[in-house]
Amino acid sequence: MSPEALARLDAMTDAEITAAALSDPDNPPWTPEETERIVMARRIQAIRRRTGLSQAQFAAEYRINVGRLRDLEQGRTRPDSAMLAYLTVIEREPDLVKRTLAASDIAAE
Image 1: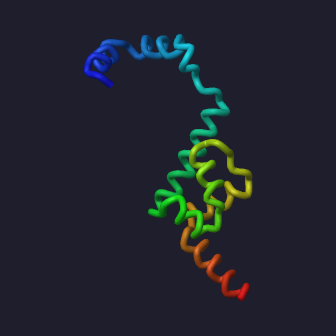
Image 2: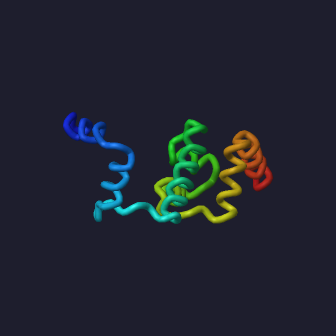
Image 3: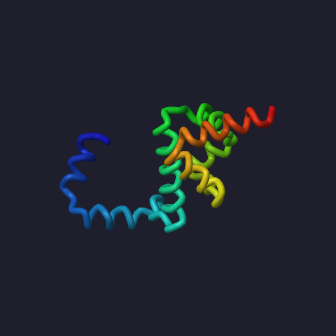
């Protein structure tokens, strides 16, 4: 933002900023569904980022389709209950998931 725009915002109260935002037809407020979708997308991004892996690496490591992961992280799709459960387990016990997947590779050979 330009210094002039920042100065205008600084001069406005929170109520004035809210009123201006609500009156802007090009910037409608998010619906509860949109808000939920964005919150979920940010949570999924945070889970992956905590692992230190790129999207492609995370997808390969945890056997998630990279396109699906990208869609989830960008809020284009919502995780179903199974994906949400899997991501929660990865969030809480990433090493356990890695060991389990590695053990399933051995068993399949």
